[in-house]
Amino acid sequence: NAGVTQTPKFQVLKTGQSMTLQCAQDMNHEYMSWYRQDPGMGLRLIHYSVGAGITDQGEVPNGYNVSRSTTEDFPLRLLSAAPSQTSVYFCASSSTRGWASNEQFFGPGTRLTVL
Amino acid sequence: GNSVTQMEGPVTLSEEAFLTINCTYTATGYPSLFWYVQYPGEGLQLLLKATKADDKGSNKGFEATYRKETTSFHLEKGSVQVSDSAVYFCALPGTGKLIFGQGTTLQVKP
Image 1 (cartoon, chains in turn yellow, red):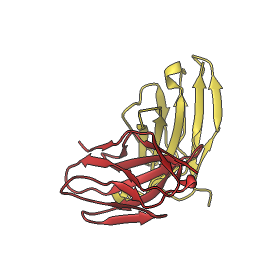
Image 2 (image 1 turned 45 degrees about the horizontal axis):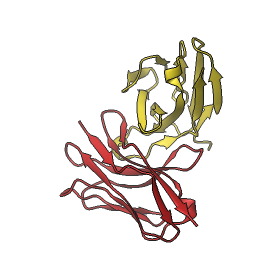
Image 3 (image 1 turned 60 degrees about the vertical axis):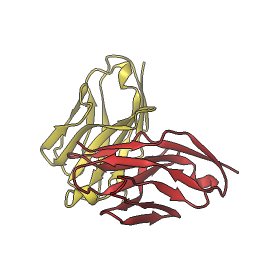
C-alpha cells in the first residue's frame, strides 16, 4: 500500500514551458485534490475532484488544468509556466464518505521552480 | 464561510518545555477540527482530530480540545522533543476542501 505518490520530486522549468505533475493513490479514495504551499500562505487549494470524471476549481485555479479519468490518478497540468507558479505542490486524497471528518492523506510533494 | 486563524511562529523551545500553539476558528455549525504536522521535506500528515464539541484529540503526547465556547482548538504538549520540530497546521472543512491555517513552525533545541 503506497498511499499517495507524486512525481517528480523536483522540477525546474523555464517560463512558458508546460509540464504535468503526476499524482496517484491506491486507497480507492474518491476525493483527490491539489494544493500549493508558499511561505507565509499556508496551503491553498488549486483543484479538486470528488470522483472520476468530476473536477472543480479551488481558490487558485488559474494557470492549472486537471482531469480525472480514473479513480487512482489526478494529474495537474501547467500549460505555460510562470515564475509565480514556483511553489511546492501537494496532492491529497480521502474518502468522500463522511469526508468532512475523515483524514486527508498527502503525497510527499513536488518542488517546482520556474525561471 | 469557515476560516481558521493560527498563531504565527516561529516558536523556539528548549527540549522538555511546554508547548501551546493557538488556533481559533469561525464556522457554521460544529465541524470536525484537525491538526496536521509537516516534518522537514515531507508532506502533511494527520496529527489528531476532534469531531464534536468538547472532544479531545490526542496523539504522540499532543492534545487539543474542541472548545465551542471560545471557538478554539489549541494544540498542547507537556514536554517537547527535538523530533517534534516541524510545521503544525490547524484545519477545518470548507466546501469540498480542508481550510488550513498559515502554519506554525516549531523548533526545539536540545
